[in-house]
Length: 268
Image 1 (cartoon, one colour):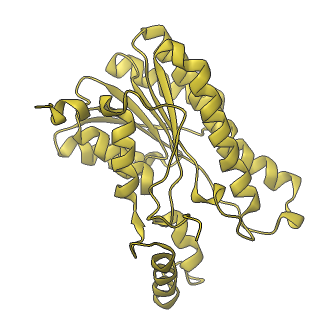
Image 2: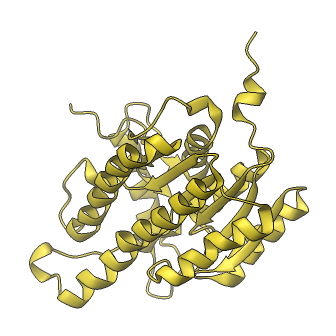
């Protein structure tokens, strides 16, 4: 019989999760910690990151929080160093943090382009570079998981700049998988489908910030209609996929785009 628990066990390993204060990043941090990983929860929202880390500790796991602006390479390097200093190394890097951009391509300003690419592309690049250096120094290899989006699979008006940055993340990930493979470092990318988080709920809010229940229900119904199984995703659905990619269960998997999206992008 195969030892399923051992295949997914992350005990003794250190993981860094950017964007860990909420949404998909929070779910990933909590799931990896539940699998035994010692987690550094990174986020621009330091208070939120500490709340997540404290929740992990209260549940018996190990976690610390650190503020990070992923568009700043020095802050990203400091985040990685936090893992190596506090937990003795780095085995899993999850580049989750990202920002949205809404509007037609014809109206994208240079400042908006720089703002979004600075976080979504450069921030992911900096995370990969720092993580790869730490993993190479340890000689133990590791797993890097980057987050793209279902926007790479279907052109939608008003999401062009965001989709562009996430397409860049996929190519970055696949190229790095080739370059880092000889070092025992696997690199994969997930492309989440519609997932109910604060990130998606920005479209469903009233002017006062409360959720417009009618718009919310319409959105959920529309997303379910796009899925052959009639479901809309939760952050935990993405976290389970990341656990697989972080663990030895996926030891033969690298350079791939993984889609937990309810089948919404199947051509039909």
